[in-house]
Length: 462
Ligand SMILES: Cc1cc2nc3c(=O)[nH]c(=O)nc-3n(C[C@H](O)[C@H](O)[C@H](O)COP(=O)(O)OP(=O)(O)OC[C@H]3O[C@@H](n4cnc5c(N)ncnc54)[C@H](O)[C@@H]3O)c2cc1C
Image 1 (tube, helix red, strand yellow):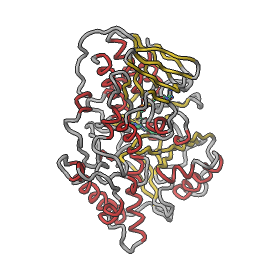
Image 2 (cartoon, helix red, strand yellow):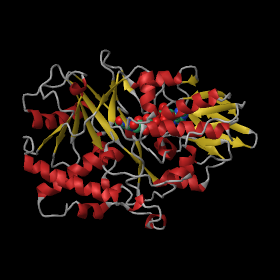
Image 3 (cartoon, protein in one colour):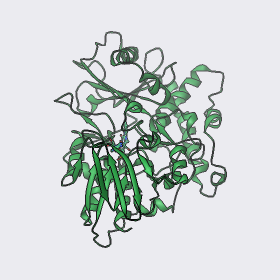
Image 4 (cartoon, helix red, strand yellow):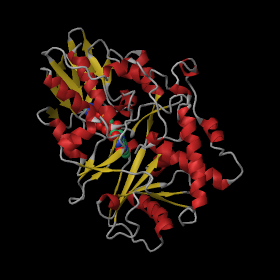
């Protein structure tokens, strides 16, 4: 879930090669030949559709038994689809995902992040004074974000990009004050504003590029009805082959040879859209090896984790209207944010979020243990009489062998051009796309989609 957009974020890579690629040039000529797309997520399907439209043959090879990737709807509850990956369109204005969602028949429900209740550690709602203190801290964070060094292209970050936010932010938020209550308020804010957005503890964020990306205006909206319908719409008319794990990509002057778990495919070009986590794990062997600059970029960007714990109850035993429930806690980052799906007309369902090291820690527990921890947190807010859920669904994205994480983040060694180096094609044969290659909107659906379209453009015009 991403909502740092409420902070003043600016484009930090204006004029980059990638933004040129994302400018949406119309296709020039129609072109023959064949392209293979690795991965049937938002980036891969958008890419495949554009290349096919330009006149090339296209095949999409997908490791999973279904399309969608990190846009992943569970239909385990037959009457109620739930999203295990992305849920929101971030920024409704000029957002191609919004258009696709509408064309696919999905409903969009505007989200008001201020429509929330915040509970203190002892259980009750925070009083006005405590809320004011949180607001003051948030204002300081917003100001700091607006002046972050990465926002100035000519800044020291070109010369000395390495390093993490760490103590600067800690001091700025005045978290090193003696008051434990103050410290917890600050950590809560950093957790729900930054750590959920990037999927990592704030200490791991690049001091230069933690405000990377561009915010679309128009507010956010939750996608309702099943994002899988949007993915089916995108895949319509495409040759998508499921359960095909790509293990090798060889290329030379004559073309590309793609090796899967069940054979080989030849093409003129390949577009790799697998998540950064998969590239990190070296599941695909590239021959010749990827250039050093790209390998370095793969290591220099971070892979974050955001997990969901979705609890369905027999009846609703909490307030109906707030869209979010937050909780201050002594356990850093634990169960600090819940989305109230009943406020979106989805019945008595609560969706809890955990990010970064607490999310990774939780992944070692089984469902029963995880739900017990979740219920302890919820009963602290809504009272001990809150009944157990009737059904649960829990994600563990860092253990997903086709993702190894939720999305990319700017880490200690990230450089101003890391995402561009990840994107750069190799010998005009091997192209890259996916959320981690997006400079404008990494970690989002629309960033992934635009990257797929940009890669299609590059393949057709190569
Ligand atoms: C919990 C969570 C919440 C999120 N919330 C939001 C949100 O609210 N709004 C938003 O805009 N974004 C959100 N995101 C981010 C968004 O889901 C992603 O940015 C986007 O879906 C990425 O699309 P992609 O095409 O780049 O990658 P993917 O969707 O991961 O597609 C890559 C595909 O490659 C396949 N693959 C992997 N390895 C191989 C292989 N070896 N061979 C063949 N195929 C392979 C994968 O199975 C996958 O289908 C969220 C993500 C998560 C995990």
